[in-house]
Image 1: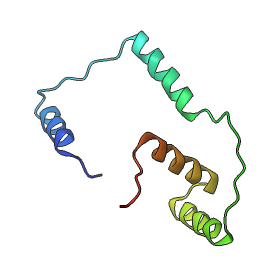
Image 2: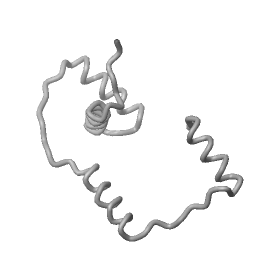
Image 3: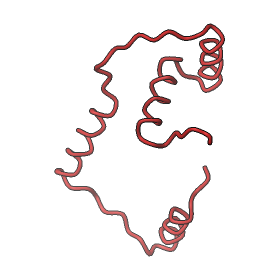
Amino acid sequence: MKLNNEEKEIETLFERDEIVLSKPDKKLLGQLHSAAENTFRKDRRINIRLSDRDMVGIQRVAAARGLPYQSLISGLIHQYVEGDLVQKS
């Protein structure tokens, strides 16, 4: 995994024992648990039409990554909505 500069700095400090991890309190654990449940809840169903060529391509990429094609499509949509996936200019 490639780390950015901030992550490298944190890793270095942790390896030197200059950063000590603390155990999260129950309130934080509850908030994290709730956020995780909301993130992975799939409560909407949609239907879309794709060209055969696109569908085969999606299935090929999903198979190479070892996941169902629906999960790949859902993940791509989520990345786009969150701003992590942008169009080439």
